[in-house]
Image 1 (tube, helix red, strand yellow):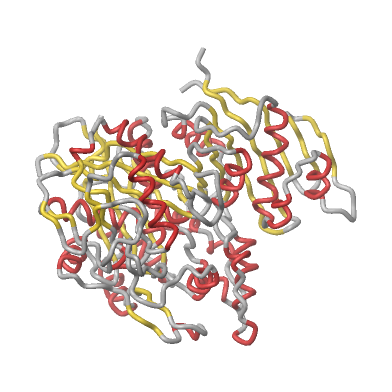
Image 2 (cartoon, chains in turn red, purple; image 1 turned 180 degrees about the horizontal axis):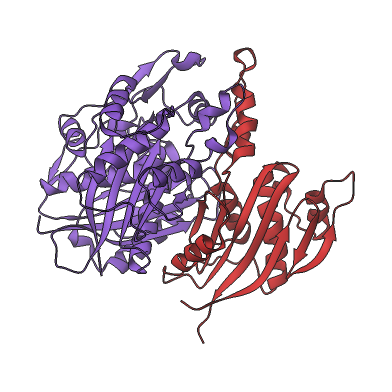
Amino acid sequence: MNTMVKHTVKLTPNYLEVNGKRVAETVAGESFLTKLYRLYNMEYPKFFKMDVLCKVGFVASEVLLGTEGGERFVPRSDRAVLLFNRHSSLHADSTFQHTIANPDEFYPSPSVFVYTLPNIVTGEIAIRNKYQGESSFILLPEKSEEAMDQAVARAFMDRETTSVLTGWVEAVSETEYEVEMELRMKNDE
Amino acid sequence: MIIRKIAENIVSPLGFTTEENFASVMAGRTALRRYYSLWDLPFSCFVSLIPDERLDAEFEAQVPCFTTAVYTKFEKCVLLSATKALKQCELDAASDRVVFILSSTKGNVSLLSDENPDIERVTPAHTAQLVARHFHNPNIPITVSNACISGLCAQIEAYRCLMSGQYNAAVVIGADVLSPFIVAGFQSLKALSDEQCRPFSANRKGLNLGEAAATVVYSVDDDAADGWRMLAGAVRNDANHISGPSRTGEGSYQTLTAVIRDSGLSTNDLACLNVHGTSTLYNDEMESIAINRAGLNPVPVNAMKGYYGHTLGAAGILETLLTMRALEDGIVPATRGFDELGVSNPVLVSSESLDTQKRAFVKLLSGFGGCNAAAVFKGYGL
């Protein structure tokens, strides 16, 4: 399968890069993710309910898809969402664990529990963009470009899939995260 | 190219082999029990648990360990199930032509309750690495973590790994064990029934959780070999809600039409649809809509949750293997717990087992994150 990369986004707690070019940097005393949310006029209040894994995945996907241009939010099944990390939903897991750790303060929170799955971020991106194609989250023991490339190639084996929004989306705390996301298109030429 | 099942295992409260599990299901047994204060949780629940004594005894007898490492229950289930499956076949698991694929939703999450949790060991990716290394396999293991559809996604990954020619065989293991984390979480979502679950029934009140590990080994085969083949698989998102199924069954409907098309089979070839049937109000209703939209309503429907509860990352593999085993005897197993149909669209669910001459079926699952998966399997020469 011949595929080509169309647009890349890299997001860390310190900076945002689009197609290899630095477009925003963090300033002390502010939430970088909230700043980007406002800077890019994302206008999606559900953002504020999300855990950090979903927030970083959402922000990176918004920037990436804004860069792609074209009509958005139209139902489609030809675009897959395939994301990777090592630590799964560790931050949400730890947060939920705190709500059940003490029998005297046992208040398991459903709004935290729903984020204790890594594929919620693929779901959030699918919902936002009305992507009804394949969505999947794969955990790898380490970040491996080769393993991710092979998984993307497998995603294209679904005959309806013509593009894949894919990348590494890791967030182990509010201040420790790394996203490298790209759009991979089927190359028909 | 043919993708054929060459080995398998199920480790569950109803048995430690597929055969023992099948016999339990045929005898109408359930692993689900009521616990009034399991792990000191402040509510009663209906769950199924793998007995530690038998797990430990079989693990020590069957899994060769050269270290004094103490494994968690989750790790023991995964290693034992894979070991038992691989003993059935000639496969060289250390070959670079073999890939290990793990399906799990929460893996070792119970370690988070330790005073100083080993964070690196919590992720299922760590367990996958442990298993691959245990069998001296050199490849990076793939862990699929797509909530409740993981077990089907893992088999679909295996299918593609083999169809693409990248590997000759795939060892696919699905497992989840329960902990206060998982039980309290589902309870907080008000998804649990405090009674035995009742798939598709008018009086269904929610799901029961269960523990299991299941392994299926697929291999590339060019011969006209007899046995079970995986013919097609598809994954689609509802793009609707992160914790509730689509009211139109969109994603499940799309997976059903895709796999029927890709398998080349027709409705008439199918012995049954082995569905998710969690017994939550919304899941079973959604499945009835998707099945009817896809025109599959003439096909008998069955669900296994009444025997095992919802076994999360194991469900897709466990339920696939049991359906295969039952169809080998020409049986569509009864849907345990079903009484009076309580979904808006007609589906052929039965509390009695059915006889069938057909040897093909669809496995259907859906899960949080809006994800849905379906796959088609067919038995040849059986």
